[in-house]
Length: 289
Image (tube, rainbow, N blue to C red; front, top):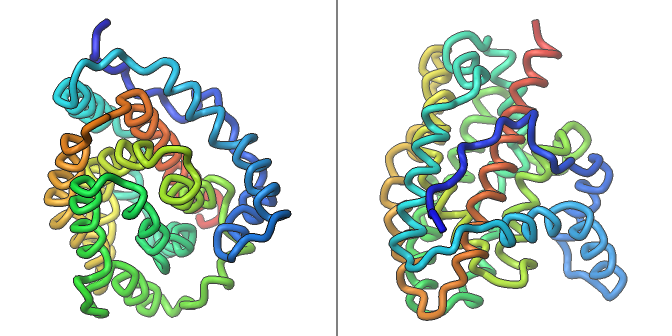
């Protein structure tokens, strides 16, 4: 079977619906606390309606990769196709979005930015040792190597402060779209809830590489709009090339790789990240002239 991936599917054509915001808000709340027995049932119910059908579908349809090298080559091709077919919204953000529209987008990703990478830590002990160490090197960078000022979440706080926005997570719960909730909840699911951490490896290998083109529109918009604290975007464009290498190492280091699960992670992340960015930009265009 060919390992060449299918072309990225436009967001509007994807067949999986995002659950309503109430379900995603509940799931976000459940992920942030120590669950009791009833909480576990609620999490499982929402996940079964949301992410598990997607994961199963992509796992069942994954190409028959013969090696990690074949999978990583397919990932490279998938990313190249996606970069070549960036949506019109990326051009709008980079070249036309106003400062007020940019602020709407920043608010939509505040739930993620204020807690960036904290939800990923539980995946480390779930991974085989060599893969875990490669992932941990990425997470150390995400957390600023222990330097609070360099942590990605602090860079987002700096951006919010420049915009005179709240630094309290709860202040963004009522306004976040279901797609942007899904973006945050995906990372919790991958790290803590997925049946195998290999979903995470595929998703994060995709994410750390796709940021190198997906964040270009954010960085260009910030520079065009004269935003001082744009380091959240420029730092990702610098460091994520290293993180991409580490994630490929984490996949190659697996003694018993499940390529179908890794590929399902790639496709899940592509869908959910793309949907969140489209939703945030669409909201900015609809609500701010």
